[in-house]
Image (cartoon, rainbow, N blue to C red; front, side, top):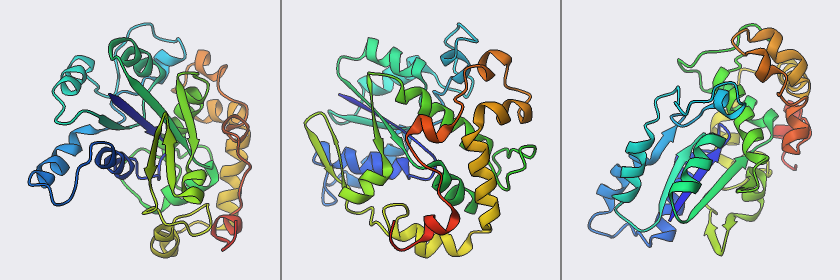
Length: 265
């Protein structure tokens, strides 16, 4: 069985995937080969390799994954998996989900969403070499954050994909799909918006002010109108199909910085 865990930035997808892997395959810390399995698990963190937004929107008709995914190699990886249930994590395209559903007998595809306001705020804290959007007037906005949100919208529209809110995981301490119930109580909630770790360790380093979050919220709530004018690499065919509001499409309301860090959600 294959479980595809596609999710928004900031939710620690690799940690989620490994937790699910351990519980479904009865892998224990005391197993002799535990460290080897843990080390090999990095091969299952596929990040953005199988994202293909242009293909998903019908702009390109080939099945080339521009960020380096090798589909034949992935199928080989699946068929030589060291345990019965393989869990992969990353940001996956509609194209990839359709392909694996066709080629693998039993697949669960899960799309974990999170409030865009929270994603932007938490994601801004870690500065890395990823390209930033410097033209939309939003401080520390990463381009991969934007594309990840678009990917979440695309997967949410697929009947073959189960969409789960990260906030529900924080509230219940578990994730359910099919007849499986996975204990995720290790994701200790601070206010059902942030985890305890994010609030106590990350947020003290946050360089955003209330106006910065408000500016992002305006962008996300007017996505179709604003983004194409600030990202010249988006072709018109895609711009016409972008959601008017990321909040509406993902079933969220904008959060202010104060609402994000408030002790009670």
